[in-house]
Image (cartoon, rainbow, N blue to C red; front, side, top):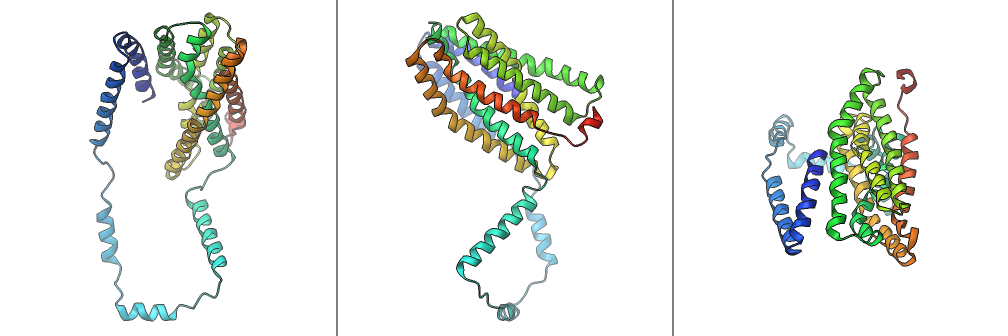
Length: 309
């Protein structure tokens, strides 16, 4: 799925740049049409879950029904609760938290907290890629059409990484190093995190286009970090908790995207006012966040990891 998204980025960027030579409205209107087509396709996907009505009807048939007199007697037999309103609210919240902890958060530990925080910080820094075109056009006096090809370059390297490099690396780690899937994913996550950090730092302090392109290429090589981290997180929880895990990761990514906008925009504006090397301030902020993400990734531990190694 990630490879398909990257393929769309690779094709969309040069096509949009070409269409902008006619009118900026052409790619915008086509984007709306394709977006509506994607929503229509998603709406036509059939439901694959079993129909819950059959199980509900079966349970209803197996449970005896109580008449009104029996229900009235049961209500009279219940003792009155002498607790105050505050105590009832406190007890309700305590019972709800106990239910959530024993059901939705069952099996969660420090590893899950580190993974969710890593997704949060990495999602903020990931939004710095949205500034590539305006940054390159200001920093190196490039046209918008020329700067847009940086997105294509990143997409091509990402696609090669996901389709060729990571599968071969994963196979080699499994066969030659005899690592378990969880340990293998952890090592890929940790290595990719430091590659992302190094590439972003190189982009932040690049004074010439060649150095900036090198940093962007290095950053693109570590793009498998997000897929590997999600795979690692899935392997560390019970199958019944995968949905809760994905919800937590999605919430962290959404929060990161929400916070990244004003933070990176303020950093970019201040960098433009100061000029010089300070123009890379948004990428400096992103590299600092990726550094913290890398440290959190290195703090993740797997039970029996030393024995497997």
